[in-house]
Length: 157
Image (cartoon, rainbow, N blue to C red; front, side, top):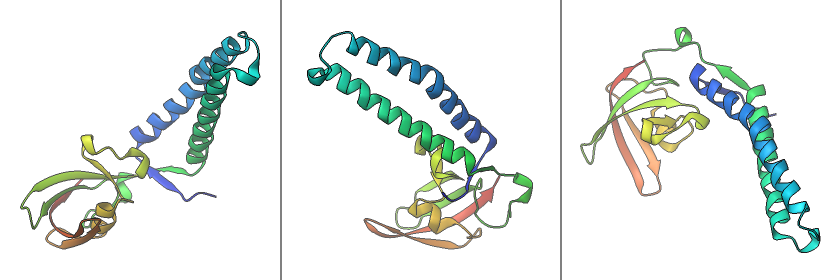
């Protein structure tokens, strides 16, 4: 059994939407590709058929993964979150002590992470380093380039 994953309501709805789309449109598209490839004759030397079968396998693996995520998914109740320390759904303003760069990130589940949107995973090195820290504290994050110190300037929701 997979571990429980926590999501925002929006994040969980996005995953459910993807699952629905893959089960309907995705499967229909792959079935059409398989049918077209079969119509071309000998399957033993049919590259289109092989490609369609591979696409089907990838699609079915993604569907299975999403279904498993749904079973173990929990929506986060913001009322139950400790607002004094960094936790999932926290909006954290941090300062890289070496570079002086200030950034703001929202802490989210791994599946919701999107750096372009300012969302980092609680499973990422930075996320793990920030979890549980309070405003004013310094988080030391082990990164491939070495240790990085981040000062937590503010925590909000």
